[in-house]
Image 1 (cartoon, rainbow, N blue to C red):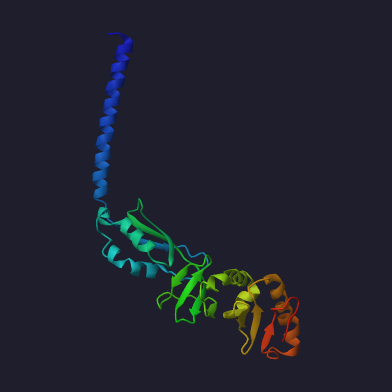
Image 2: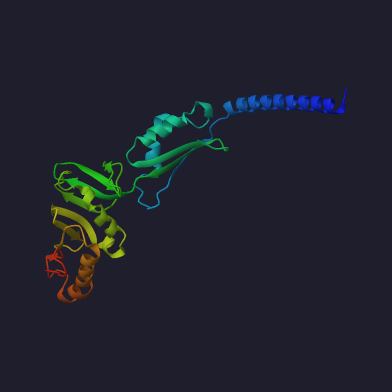
Length: 246
């Protein structure tokens, strides 16, 4: 037998042995995997805003039938796809990822919705909205302290979504996020800010020209009212360009 033929035969035999070995190991690993038992369920909520609107305890409560008795049971019997689907249907959750780790623990990672305001519609409905205007149902189990928006909202005329730029501006300003506790919409051109000063309101006008309007208000709150008295005016208005009317 020629040397090249011998090398070819040995290579073919070696390859066949390797393939058989890999198949056996895969079968063995799969069998071992099917016998793995759950060491527990770990729920992580990525609450970057520290709102604690969605908590691990509430997540566990929502999926309790799917994880009941999980610890100690075979991992192959835990339906992680069903857990993900159940969580994705909850409007307070933006995304959920469920995996089984090498530690035999079911890891559930949740990105919650972050409410920007609580809306009380004059039609009798109440809900939260996030920065994208998505409605989030409100109930006693899920509560977060955010500015309240009240008004007669008709989507075809003036919806709560149109206040999102104003709400975002307030949230990202250290002064106004502390001062403004409520927004009341009397009309699209009469948006009323309710500060945490009892008996006083601010007619902001239409929700526009934020820098100019809030700059004028800041002058009133830092220079005028400390001298005149915080309750000297019951109403301030910045709806007209370049003016503050008390």
